[in-house]
Amino acid sequence: MAEIPHIGYDSAADQIFRFLSTTGATNGAKNANGDYTLTPTQFFIIPAPGEVFLLNQFTVYIEDTNDFRGDFYGDTAPLSAGIDMKIQVAFGFGGSIFDFLDKEPIKTVNDWLKHGFKVDYDITGFGNRAMAATYNFTASGKPAVIRDNQKFAVTVQDDLTGLVAHYFSIRGVKATMKNSAPSPVTFTY
Image (cartoon, rainbow, N blue to C red; front, side):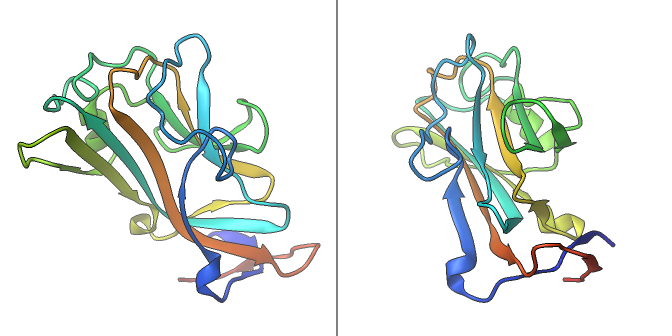
């Protein structure tokens, strides 16, 4: 069983329903459909000091003008660098703590499936096409734990301007540290 500091949460206000952004807060850019080839960009969420995030679900939303191809990313050719998803130290690009994709970045729509995401498509036949790839962290038994000196980050390093929209969202619970010098305790869900 995982050991984490003693934490608590007790209200609906502690629920996390957020898009990842370029600032880690609600005021940053959220639509990841830019050109990131020269400047890799992170979309992330970061707890405030004294907080811990228990993340239950991560969703990627992609909207494009044409049908999706499994060997492409949307209706765009496969990504060359790909998309990474990690828990990292709070500031900067380095200091990877956990790599959710095992050093196999997302380069095609099928890669979301390869990594265990549930993929749903909008097949109405009208307007733009949409796809959602969802990963449930708690399906493996525990939520993803992001401490106050860490961040949950998605790094984009390719040109995604061909997509209409590209968002990353997270669901979970925000908890606060119960004491300033946490002693590890084991808790179950």
